[in-house]
Every structure is written in C-alpha cells, then in structure tokens.
Length: 252
Image (tube, rainbow, N blue to C red; front, side, top):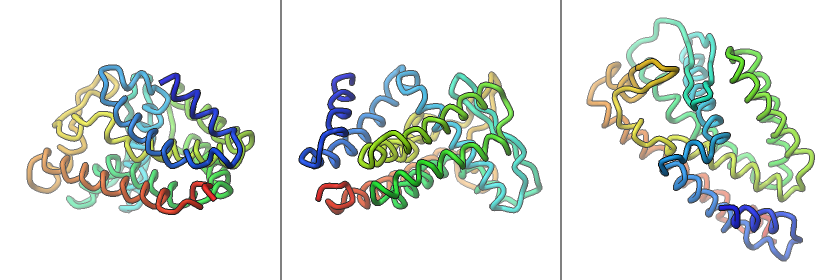
C-alpha cells in the first residue's frame, strides 16, 4: 500500500501528460478501500476513514429524522469507531424505518452527491471548502462528546487545507477518494447489514436492519440485502458518472 500511495502522489503532482492515470487511480482507490475494510484489522488500517464513515452514518440518521418532521438532538462519535445519533419525536412505522435506513443509505447518497457535484477540478476545490464549513456547522449543532468534536474539527481543517494547498487536480482526486469512502462506508462492516444487534459505546442495541424489520415487516436480513443492493447501485452510478468522459478527469 505504501508503494501505491507514493505512486499516487507522484502522479498527482506531475503535469498533464500523466493525467491518463486518473481514472485508474480512482478505480484502484475504490477497490483498495473496499478490500482493506474487509481485512481483520481493516477498520484500524483506515482509522480516519472509518471514523468519518461512522460520523456520516449517524448524521444520516439525524438528518433523515429532520426530513421526517422529527427532532435531531445530538450525535456522539467514539474512538472505537462506533457512534450514536439521538433523535426525538413520535414517527409512524414508515418514518421510523426511513430514519433507521437513513444511516445505512445516507453516506452512500452523500458520496454520490459529491461525485456528481465535483465534475471538474475547480468544482472539487469549491466542494472541499463547502464540506469544511458543513462539518463545522454539524459539530456546533449536534456533536456532543470531546473525542468526536476534536476529530471532526481536524477533519474540517484537513478539508480546508486540501482545498487551499493542493492543486486543482490534487484536490479533485482527494475529494473523489473521500466520496468513494462515503459510498463504500456500508461495506466496512458488511456483517452489520445482516445482524440483528450491534455494540455501541459498550451497549448492545438493535441494528438498523432490525429496527427497519421491527417497524415494517420481513426479517432484518432482507432489509440488509435490499439496502446493500441499493448502495452498490448508487456507488456504481456515481463512479460511472465521473469516469464516463475523459474531460471529467482532466484527461484532455
């Protein structure tokens, strides 16, 4: 992996003649992130990305609650990679299922949105500044534990610095790696999609798939499989959009 990172950095700073590698790097990053997250210590190897994925997952729950007319109270991000969003209200069965599914699908939707909105290096730089600002807003409004606050403030700083320091092409590739990470966030712990429970902050709680099953019908593994299929389709759509034309990757 160290060799790949060095090669990736080399090509980012090279002139236009090396731009033909951009598509391969994006696809390679997608494959590596998905594979490493399945390794025994994959979550630790990609620790910052794991925490970012968890944060986006929990934010998906909270924002979906707001969209359903409920309240989003707080969010915590733990150092072990787990997190919890607290919302309040009295939703019906469908709204409860949507809120539970929002954490599973939300990061993929966010990742695809980033890919669609950053269709040029200049737009990618702007999106990094926007992401930095949005992270800061979410920290102020909802994040409530010290570890989570420090980590997400660091993330906001990294986004802003990447937008300011990296060249257009470097910012473009950096943002796409972040977007792909969000698209694949459900893949980091595939077993969770097909589990009835999970441990968060040392407590055993129902999984999102189980909560959907409780609110609607059919077993939790059905909903896990359905959400996995939706996530795969959305990810493929986003990557296809970015790689479908050479100009989008700065190839011409």
